[in-house]
Image 1 (cartoon, rainbow, N blue to C red):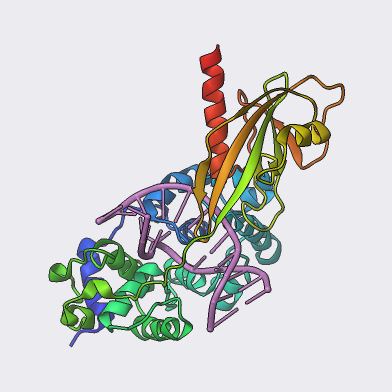
Image 2: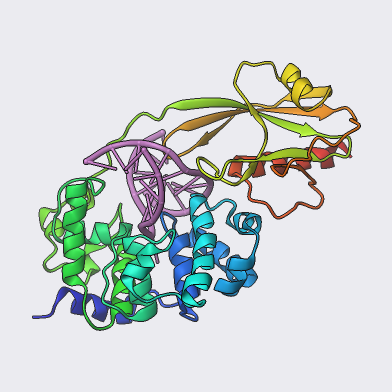
Amino acid sequence: MSSFADRLLAWFDDHGRKNLPWQHPITPYRVWLSEIMLQQTQVETVIPYFERFVAKFSGFASLAEAPLDEVLHLWTGLGYYARARNLHRCAQQVVAQHGGDMPSDMAELEQLPGIGRSTAAAIASIAFEQPCAILDGNVKRVLARYHAVEGWPGKSSVHDTLWQFAEKHMPRERCRDYTQAIMDLGATLCTRANPQCEVCPMRRGCKAKKTGQPQSFPGKKPRKILPVKTVQMLIMRNPQGQVLLLQRPPTGIWGGLWSFPEIETGSDCENHIAAQFGRVQHLTRWPVMRHTFSHYHLDIAPVVADLLPRPQNIAEADSRVWYNLKSPPALGLAAPVKKLLTLLDEFNLEAQ
DNA sequence: AATACGGGGAC
DNA sequence: GTCCCAGTATT
């Protein structure tokens, strides 16, 4: 009579993923960095970001010393930018409070910014071989199926039940391999749409398979209609061809990133620009582009304005910069801002 | 107990 | 188009 963990580990030895970038070598820094990047983000998306990140910042000390703008620059496009701000703060705390070494204790890990219960357990088990259970999207799916747990895991009662099963199955030995194994099973066999039940090592004992509808576990999130917000983004070029960007507040959407000045839909761009930034020589409107977040749609109306020369530089404040497309500075950019800057650069090339 | 927080891959 | 991803912090 072999346990859940024993069967899973036996499968892992033959079929687990063992060549992910953060597995060679396995160090607390690399485990931590990968776990933060992998929060709500798929493996294939993370890989190039992870490679660039470790190439630039070799460990906690170099990351802690770096300017936040450079961290956000390397995070551009990955989303959930609070992760990058917390990552930077976490590195500074590891240096200041732990002598530059990631703590191995669950309670201490959870005190660090950006590290919650599941990420703390992932670091403790993978980097330090401690018997701490994780509960990420893969594990939720595997356990909801194995035990036929009804309901959407976003509900706290369902979530609590899944945590109990996660703790129950966590073995005392081979903690790193077990954590990796249960995620690998969820990512490769026990997938959302087409689970490969016939070759699954856990098929005996899986209650969802017994129902004949394994793909109906876990329960779906109740869907709501996404609200639509609209905004005009001002893409202002000075006579040198540089574009004005403002830094967004540290919290909220695109926190700490650089973006175009925004004005309310319907208000007069030309008057606004004249009052705030300078006289307009030429103004072009681009087609509205829809950017969708997890909780709303944002319809962006880009307005490209060429400004007349001005005696004093209007980008004097710390939160303003003239962005040079030919030698872009290392700043964090929201995805649609990066897209618009790329389009602008392409039009510039055509015009020459 | 709910909600805010991105962007993109899979289907 | 829909769903959801190696979740956390905040309310």
